[in-house]
Image (cartoon, rainbow, N blue to C red; front, side, top):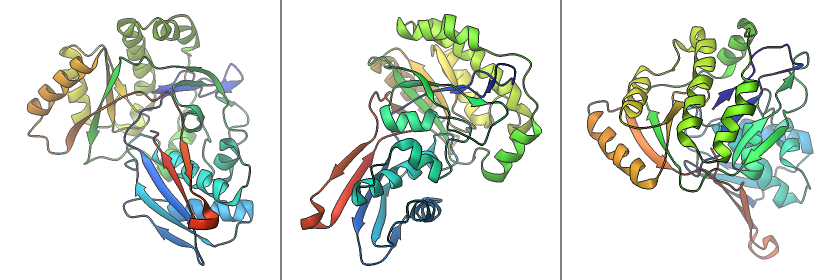
Length: 317
């Protein structure tokens, strides 16, 4: 959902917040094999993550990785972190390595600015991280400072743009190097207003403060992504949703995916149906209704002594 402190004055920079959702998901099957086999259609960096983990933990090249489902890449939904952690958790289970998510993330070089994806994988829910020490941006993964259960009745309507990808890779690194620290922080707003609104299930107030957070991030990253939102079509859809009753809208990470948080399943279904009609001529835009997820990833292990297989199912975003 964004960073709440883009200054470097409080000793920490980037402190972020985000929500775990139940879909789209990453699902892998990892099994014993005579040789290393990777089946990963429509997925990126799987081989790269596998090689990093083999090297970091001195693993034998005697397993297979099959990607059954994956989160869309470069859509702002944390696909890389979830894929890396899923592979690592599967290998941890298969080889009994006794690793935690932070160790896997460090080996796969994830969590360099945000700990939200790692917290989502480990425990789910609505998460707040501590940020990075301003003078040590390459060091420890940001710790999760707070975790809240996301209200069961609220729904999230994702706005997806198949024709656009968010900033990533070398372009992302260059962006953070080029952008100077922001002149102000939203820490006080977050602590005194936004988080209390979440805790009392006040979506109207929560949404108003989300708009402040989105403006803070959107204006800061506008020189890189071309405006407050990465996709003009997503921006148009979010504006329509807000005009038609969505109390909380925004962009996920670098986008292009946008989101609207709604009070109920009924409201979400109604707005989804209406939006699909209104934006039917924009073939790149789609609307997906999901829920918050208050639990982390799951590992389902079969008896590998008999079946030579272990399966990992992850539902993170």
